[in-house]
Image (cartoon, rainbow, N blue to C red; front, side, top):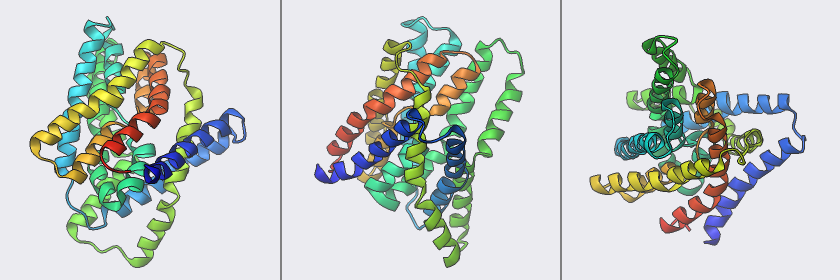
Length: 308
């Protein structure tokens, strides 16, 4: 228990410091923009590429269990939004995205690395490489259909996939996969650089995550936001765990899949909902509530997995 608290407490403390720094205006908007650019375009890609090119067992089974449970969670949440909550299609689509799209970059990478080290990170990379590539196009298609088809859906879908493939984090995963599979050695000087820059990724990413939470208001449409947060933090891990159990995932892979499934909602879900004016306030509230509640749910999950 004490060991786990020494890992989890600093992670959420850094998120809290980021939130407080922006709330108290200790960090300017321009300064935060620079930090976000640094961590997104350089630090996290270096950390991820370094992990992807380090010898590791494949994460295909981990990714299969995760995305099977993830897609089930997405479509069940959409169905719930349409039938029980009487949402329009666009709102139900973003509701589903909020219930399935986790913050695997800014909180998943630091948490998995801290608890499970490089072997755990290698499993997470298999998920990160496909995370946005699978979920965002689905959300985009539903958003476009609900929006009245003002632009050709296939054109929007191609643009979305192209945008995801230009994402520095996705590129780092793909590049690392190619280098590792091709057996291309990474020079020691390059490895030292990757490790040095990558070491700054976790604290800066967590700080930036906390800073972005200031923009969200949990008081708006909080009952449905709380339900969505519950689906993300509790229901999706159950689905992923059932799939992992059915295919016989080994302990490390199962743990990484479960913890990744239990991550709070990522901000990309909010940005998509704002783009289509489909439940943006609910989405922002879900991001904030799920992040706050994950302090408890992730701690309990990690304890149940024997991490403490």
